[in-house]
Image 1 (cartoon, rainbow, N blue to C red):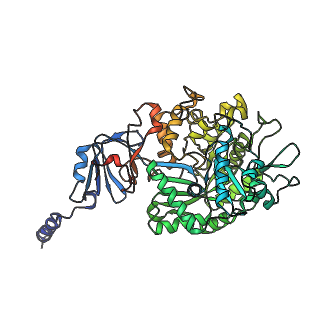
Image 2 (cartoon, helix red, strand yellow):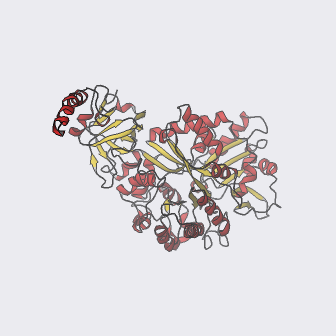
Image 3 (cartoon, rainbow, N blue to C red):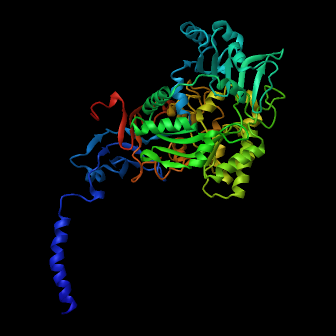
Length: 575
């Protein structure tokens, strides 16, 4: 029998089957209706070309289409929720590049001292003392002496006068200094004979007695004594923090320093389907030469990537090189201008930091190190360079958190080494009241130097450092673009030559922030195949007056295709 005849018989039987199955009504996966379609929108995709679109389609937790209105029509079926945005603006979901989620939540349960007048803080402590039994702890957060008429650091006598029978601990807004009363000093065993620990300072009066202010490692004897919230309270704090962030348009965040206990709480809340926001967690490290329990646990356990449908990743470690400018504990190469003879505090020796970075490299953990002063930044770059030379890793994405004051040569090295500066734009506009007093005009040329850093070839990961600053990312976008505080000062901007452009600022809170956590292929821009994380806002970020950027309000926050926050203003647009 000839082959042509054989083929004809086969086609005679098979062709009808092919036609039958091809005519079935069930569409192929790529042709299935979308769960959600948005059209008639003003979409900034933040893709490689910073292109615009007017429509998008979501299936599952991913975008399947980003383009024009006619093109999205093929994704609309009987099950599709269609939203006509009537020209409103869509941005990628905001990625908060550096914050402290558990602390933010727990601070919502403490005395709110955030940037409040000294007298108002003391009145709040007095009121709390009247409510509590003697011996019960009073804890608060957020005081900033730089906004007081008397900018001197506070002292224990002020707290003794309003709460003599209760231990009182109030943390400065930067998190690097605490203000305590005599009861706390007594419980912690801190006296005039106590020595300053490496990496910290016990502030003293003219007679050598502790004033009640302690910085960095000197805070540890007190921190160990403060009663910690129980597990239920800690989980409640995480959910309170999430409820605070979703209306701000934040869909992902970096938790900059996470104890194992907090990670376990996060996992439980994800399992309970209560935690929705995406978290990229850097594990907490111990200060000093020895590895802490958090590092030991996770170096043994290994990295955990994309848990709970890409909602939780643990693949980095957070180290500390120094303190803060506000507390004069940031490590400087030369003396502080407003405190001759003092250069701040390095947490590690050069060799200790090198060993800690090398240990992280050994276990394939990304490294993010807090460094604010130029000596701290230089020490971190030296450690990174040495480890990466000895143990090459082309795509390391090592980070320096804050990167506030730097020698110009180190800005060049930053780019050459591929180290990512994770900076917070609102730190500049908050610190402008004291930064130049601390370091002088010459060193200011390498401080908060966003333009210089970007022009040198680096990207910037932006964030708020909340609760150090308010978590609102539009305050950060505004500060990045204007270099002004929310009162519009100084007119024209503080060192305005260091401003970011609007596209750069937006990238720093989206695609650049995603790159800083190895997730730029997953999120950070609105492109087909990426996660459907986006926000609808009440005005056009790229076109509105710069003064209005700080006032932008999210109307819709979507994570993985699910609407997790909706402003009442959208009533009638999306029921």
